[in-house]
Image (cartoon, rainbow, N blue to C red; front, side, top):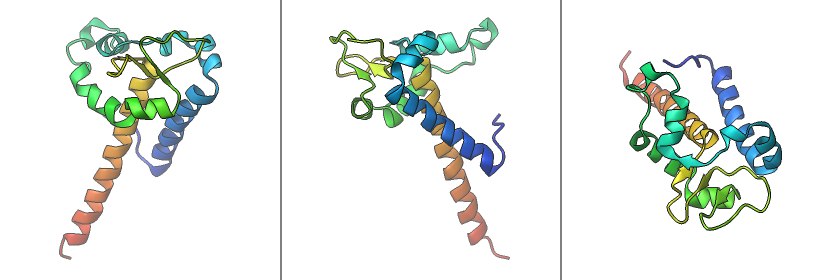
Amino acid sequence: MCYLKIDQDWDRHRDLIKGVDAALKDSREMVVKCHASFVALMPLQAVLDELAQEPKRQATHLKAKDVRPALDKYYSVERTREMDTYLEKEETPKEKKAYMRSGGGTGADFNIVSVTCALGRQLLAEHVAAGKSMVTRSASTPR
């Protein structure tokens, strides 16, 4: 169920994702200091298990195979390298900085922030696509 109903809700959702992206790029030390558990890099399924803390939700919560396409689309290795939020597996962080992805060339480790932002971007994309299909459908419907 999606609680985002009016255009302003979707605008705030979009702004929130942009703000989190900017925080990881520009205020990385502060994010690590205040929210270290949110930016701890770990295998994708471990992140998803962390998000589904209640045992009764384990059966229905997201699986890595469901989330990985959104991560690869919105936070690919190339994009996170451009954002300077990719940690090479063999690299040791010089400072306390937040990263969205790590893992050599495969980008195998993620965190709560990267998963949440990728799913948020996917939700926005589906909302936009649904809006366009509604406009197309209503325009083609005879009056």
